[in-house]
Image (cartoon, rainbow, N blue to C red; front, side, top):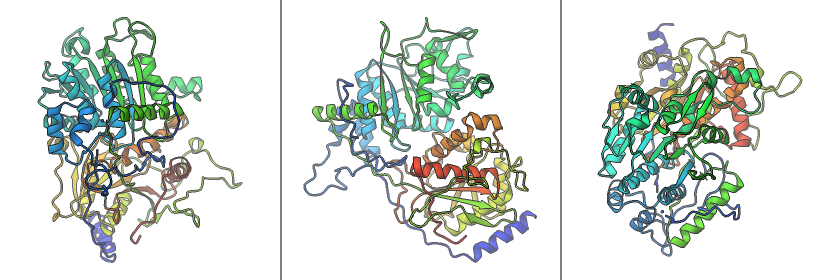
Length: 585
């Protein structure tokens, strides 16, 4: 079918479906406070800071700030709250002028900032996506610089590097050096930031010099989205053959080489030499920082456990529902210390996005993957064989059907997305984001969608480098287009809808990769992509038109089975549930 015939076919479907009236977006507020001593005495396992553990998108109790407080509720003194978190006065003045909604630190920001202020501790920081972890890293960096320290920040994408550099400049008078892909930067800057590959280029500018030799006087290194930068790691259930074939054994992640070069850790013939490790405090932050990643960081020597003359204490902050009883007890202890010091934290309100999934037949017919049982909205049953036994999808070969995945992106997925986007558009003044599977052509998808009448902006490096401006309220709905690799760290304040083309994109994996936890890793990618929504300090959050994540796969394909299986697991484990599409299909 030609582009013109496809466009006419989809346009005729659009014409038969009434558009929903857009609803004006409402703001979502963000918020971050101090303690001078950190203790880790075990206490009650009751979660503190108003946290209600209800899945990956936890809702917090409302804070008593000026916008929400009743007549008897105390008003938060924002200046005092940030000051007790260790943020310099000059930074506080700019912070409250630029971001007046940041009335106080969030619980995780409060704990992290006080841990940094105490000094002498390496830190793990885990909190839900969109709750201001990167923002806390910026505030901590500015506080460290005031104390004559020097900070290196390793970030996953050039887009996030640019955003963090702009935020540093907006909040503080500090020299910032951004490392280019060619390894060029201001070597004397107090805060140096870039991607791991850019830092490796910087180290390679001088023969026989490590990154630690080129950047002298570094006191802290912050690594954001550490697990996505490391990639998939081996797990305990692997056989010896699976372990030897694991991708991590063949290709060392750039972040690992960059950290080794910065710390002065040397790898020689399978032996790790820590004898020249530099005394640099490290911080690792991620919304999905699991125990496997923590163990890997320990083993590589990027943090140092207790014991020994040069060892540091490790502060393991986890504000997610996956926190262990010990981690829950730690954050409760911190809450008690903060209360004694008079520090306050604000409880942000974040709304959960809705989740939808569709399959598309070869003829272009859309079908919702909504197999809900009565009274169990969003329940997805497990995949079973003819005898009713549950099938382990990791061992299931690709189905030999007409819809076996092939290189490129089927045009039926683009047509289905265009139809859904047109029939239930996002509110005026917001963006939609289409996320392509690995190997798909951004230029080809842009041309296809333009032929279908969509206003598309591909997020190529040049666009991200220049920044994405808020869409004019009167402009036609704009769809941004990007690849999965560019999603970690992507922050678009006016993003309303995400379309995930080809679902989990598991079919690209070999059978051995699936059995090595590849499908679980792709489910983690879904969480990272979903985390682009519901972020603090965004302009999108109207309860009448909530943000949404829409997965679109080919009918009767491996991707459809994998998506069903994931939602079945997540309904019971993570409490993600599919919703009913608000328009016609």
